[in-house]
Length: 217
Ligand code: PRP
Ligand code: URA
Image (cartoon, rainbow, N blue to C red):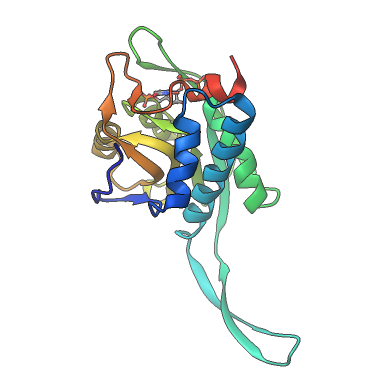
């Protein structure tokens, strides 16, 4: 069902029983919307925390209340989130919970329901995005078409591939391959790699339409 095979530039969350339990709930077709949201949000938080682990830091020494010296680190560089509307917006709060007053841009891409090909409708991004690390947010990576299109937009705005971290809940092997054929230097941070896609290009076993389940449409 879910693979732990290594892929270059893919960070798979540790496949603990805790994580498996969360995925079991959100994949279950009988799970109602409030639980779907609650447990998806828990996974999103783990993805954001893992993404933050990959940002550069510099050494920082502080004095503690016990008059000791603590040798720690401080984060370097500015970040922003970019969500692929609609489903990606579900991940914005998880990023805000970890990074207060983080800037969030949006790209509206929708898959055609017949062909599964993505169409770009709208983008609104921070003016200085080229100088930021970008957390690209979308819970599902199926064929890879939507993520590739969103990444095209980011690169056209001057963002370097190495500064993009694509956070998603479930991806397919073909989605990873397609995405990394286009953009090998973007790091994908995910919690599950599913075995494939069905004839409608939905992830299997997957969880169905993430946006419909999160936003109850
Ligand atoms: C879903 C999902 C991704 C895309 C993944 O969005 O959120 O954006 O499909 O599929 P792909 O890898 O084959 O491109 P969808 O277009 O269904 O819109 P939604 O966010 O409104 O659900
Ligand atoms: N989008 C979804 O929401 N689910 C899939 O399985 C594929 C694309």
